[in-house]
Image (cartoon, rainbow, N blue to C red; front, side, top):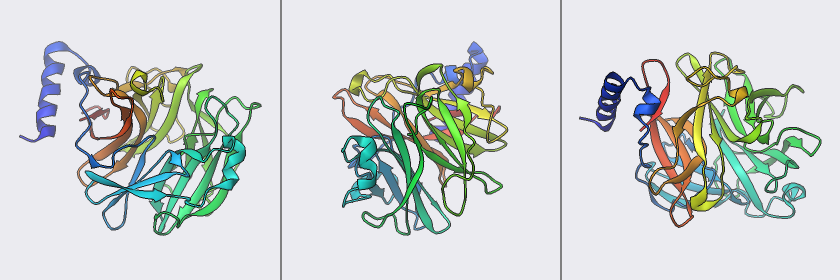
Length: 320
């Protein structure tokens, strides 16, 4: 019996015998799948390349990269900007630590949206870089996409590009303040196409960030992270999801609570020696939709987590 079949059987049994929801039946969360090599990572996103290999980008000095031939063994692949990114330092206080890159491959090019900020501040900016190869040093600075300041009630970090089935480009982003936002992009430039800022999710100023938007079947799923990141083994980060039949929302959790009112369904949280799993990304591979995230070990170090995503008969995702 395959791991997925066994899991599905266990969930079905739990539903029948206890009346639990699938989320409750899966409350004993799975450990990350096996990954080897250079797996230290924070705020990862990942893309499958045209050659069938994998390229991950993550928070670090001038944005860091890892590659893998098989989604299991990873090796370091240098910095996106090995010569530095001077255009970002006005937002980082001079630091070269750039945050939360979102990598994707479209129209023969890799697109990388990434953040420049300092901890606890919304003097922040999201920039775009592009490359035809994805390799360290090959990236072109395409400039500023959106910025925020203390005058705004939202925060321009944690970007995610989503292209809907009609070919419309959208950027979701946000952290704390009034929550998760969305802006429309011009598909030709990757920059904003209008001045509208839509609200997708929020917790009344509480901890919500790292949006990631995907479509499966007839639903759009908005994945986010709740609670405290970046505190090592004391982190309380957890991965949540809501869904909508429209790309712009409204998104709701399984119990119907709007994500703009703090709703969402928990998908993965701390368990055992896996602390604060979060800052997730999702991509579709040949075997399943794949959930990529970081978590903290007992030592406080952050590592790459990879699991697969299944969907129950009602179309709600679960992690295995």
